Amino acid sequence: MPIIFGPAGLGPVKTAIQTLEKYHEMGLRACEIAFTYSVYIKPSECPLIREKAKELGIDLSIHAQYWVNLNAKEKEKREATKQRILQCCEIGELLGAKIVVFHPGYYGEDKDKSFETIRQGIMEIVAEIKKKGWKIKVAPETMGKVNVFGSVEEISKLVKETGCSFCIDFAHILARDKSVDYKRIIDAFPQKDWHVHFSGIVYGDKGEKHHISTEKKLWKELLINLPKDKAIRIINESPTMIEDSVQGMQLEQKLIR
Figure 1: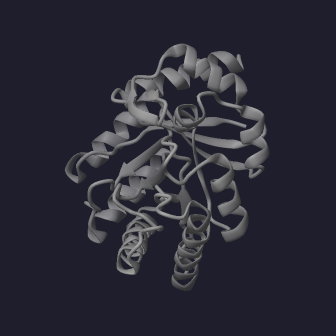
Figure 2 (figure 1 turned 30 degrees about the vertical axis):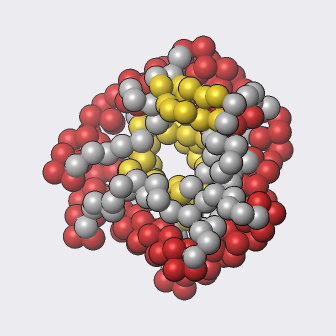
């Protein structure tokens, strides 16, 4: 099945149509809209972007705000997180986006209890999405720091127990675990549709430090090891995300041939 590629950014609304056209011309078929600092697209601005993405065959996804935490100690902060994610879902639905990626939260004082609290929060979000009749799904992401909730097993278990989607960030997995066990990841996520993040990454003992441009050899390792029987969307988050997405796409085409 085909793999589609795209960058983690659409940029300002005023240039969104031109940006999508540029991505299309380059052969890119995915784009993740970064609501990481704010939900900057208004409902009235969604139809035009939605129709252009649909016309060009570009899959849209959303990345929710960085400061969400479904395991916050204070209930009001957990509620605020749910509302932020739901706001992303509302705009995402209007944009025709398939999923909203988000960072689930921190372990806090009780690591064992964190799963239950985050699971409950996701179930409430999923229930609200269903109530509103939206098609969009929420996707907790595998995280790159050892003290942050989001191991492969934790995200896999959330998917099984809540029916949510997921985001497999291979750079984060490398930073967290110091290696990537592809069989373990394939076993953990048997679903046919995969939303993937990938980039170069600098990491230390405690995990992720920051993203860097993606080396060709890392692209090759990923593409050779990805399963062939799934629909996979790869979003690149490096500082050179557009160039890196094109490089990944070109390498994948060579591997197919």
